[in-house]
Length: 113
Image 1 (cartoon, one colour):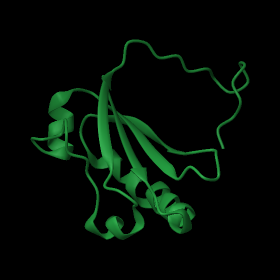
Image 2 (cartoon, rainbow, N blue to C red):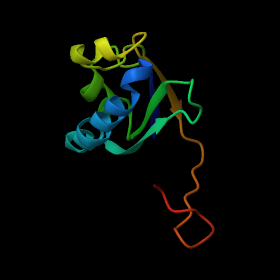
Image 3 (cartoon, rainbow, N blue to C red):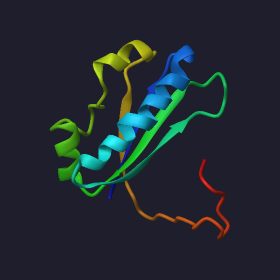
Image 4 (cartoon, rainbow, N blue to C red):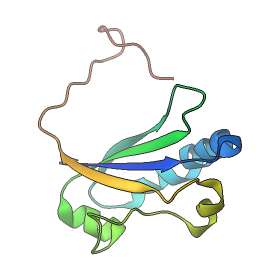
């Protein structure tokens, strides 16, 4: 499994709107890609930190290449319409998952919001 971390620095006045759109349209759209295993959208907790991360999990390099193209290792995917909402172009990093632990709700884990 490959973990892809897409990160953007969003304009302070657009963070809520930007995150709402990613949550309602972009993240659910990943379901159409073969090899997509899941993901989550993160927004920084600190008010003056306007970073947004999208963490996605992919079966293998072939699945990522199908989604992001031949330069998937270094080229983030974003819409040209998003550029006016970002302070800088997004970045992307990849990691191999070595171990994962998920606790079921009610077994010590707090429910997700």
